[in-house]
Length: 301
Image 1 (cartoon, rainbow, N blue to C red):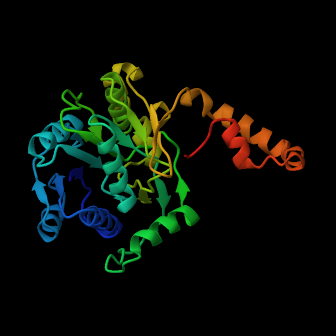
Image 2: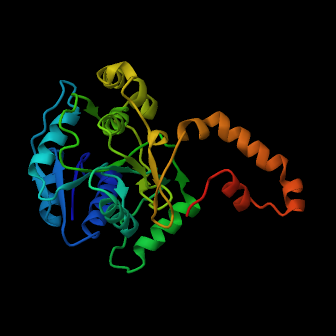
């Protein structure tokens, strides 16, 4: 069905809990899921052996110790037993809605890139996967107690083998490589499908203690700037706002136009002010939010 590939932090303390949660959730998606974990961090070999995953200990690394994106993507596309692959960060819990989204995208057309905004959620304990309702529970919890992250954060990429035939030596662990992956699909003329209305990818919150400046440091330090430089000095960077299609909550894939213009921060603030400022008038006229969304073209069906 699908080959997952990823790389992990050392399996210690909280990182061990959330990474095991993520990996186990992928295994449960389908009996034919393959998982490849790259890197020789502490505990990786043992976890792969326990879960029946393929472990590739060697990864080309920068002098800083950071792993090269091109090394992982090239090797994964060579090793994968399936034609469709998914790179996912190793803290993302995925459930059956993700599997259904992948199946719908493959049935739609052979070549695409599927991404989605993640839901940030505090998870401190192992997920009880033996409970039949675990998947529904974590999706509900994410929507109720979590936070939908902005479209700049992209944590999984589903694509057909061969899309990433030439990847620059960017570094995983610093920002902006995910934006290059979106640009590459667009540059090759592949549709980029935003599955956010349909999929609830759960990002298990964690600290950024491995960088002295925390998350800001991973976005802005010299190695992050190096990633930007390798993306034509930032010209080859795109986000989910640049997606060409969107999967509705009913699983239909629709073309999206002018999304970056229509969903910019400024436009969204103006739209929200309009919605709030015209509530009484719209209520008198019988115009509810759903009606307004349809008039503006923001329909799910």
